[in-house]
Image (cartoon, rainbow, N blue to C red; front, side, top):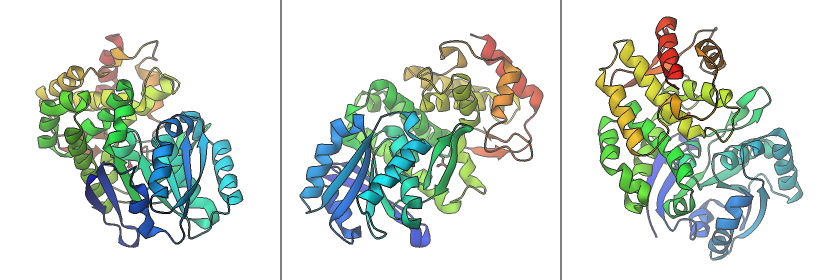
Length: 371
Ligand code: GLY
């Protein structure tokens, strides 16, 4: 087993993120120091359970920790009121107490749902994230955003509830389908674009080998992403300011996800990649960054075989005006004013409060008509 530790400094809500190999098989030893009794409840999904639950169970057993588990159906539909109710009632029926620890074993859906269940169970119990997707390892498992979707939209019901420990086992990424891995890579690229030009350059060099399975490179990419996220979350835990930078590409992405019905046509991380390319195009047209920057972003995404342009999304999409209306549903809208994360260059993003509507419309017109 070998791992690196990134500390998330949040006062009495501080915790470690461990990134490396063999963490699942040694989860018992990792988790034992924070337990009051040798028993945990594990929330997972059926796909992840089939692949990884036995390894977790023997890892816990090796440290004398018993586990009970509930596997929910895999997929976004599980981030829902019915699944939350089922999870919380199950935890109560298993007599999970205030001092106990809940373990979230899965991707972003399970992490967000289990974190929210932990936030409200008996007014709050601790939880450990064991993220099994690249997207969850670099983004959703760190920072304490938990919640479920509402019929009114994604992530509209939730709470900030920080985990007590995050175990990101790089080995579990081997079992991801290439499309899911690359979707998570969209979030990795986002970190370079928003705040670390050297990291983006490193990804340009190492991205292909990393996607092909090199674990040392994967570990490095996850560590750097988590370091950047930890730094931003430590500055702005509840997104009053800088944390919004983590949403680079996301306002475009949320509109694309809504326009594609949250379906398999577009995975979240794919939408983030396309959204980052659009944010750089917008920045260049506003004269904020050079014309070369959006080209460089697109060249890298394309060279990784990722969805890069709106034209890469199959099926029909609405026109620019309807698209702008969908962007207006974003949580970053304040008093009806659209706020976008734009960039002065690669690695230099900022929150723009006054986005010129005519430039936005022309960027979208060109993107949508190139189909
Ligand atoms: N995924 C964005 C954030 O955690 O703030």
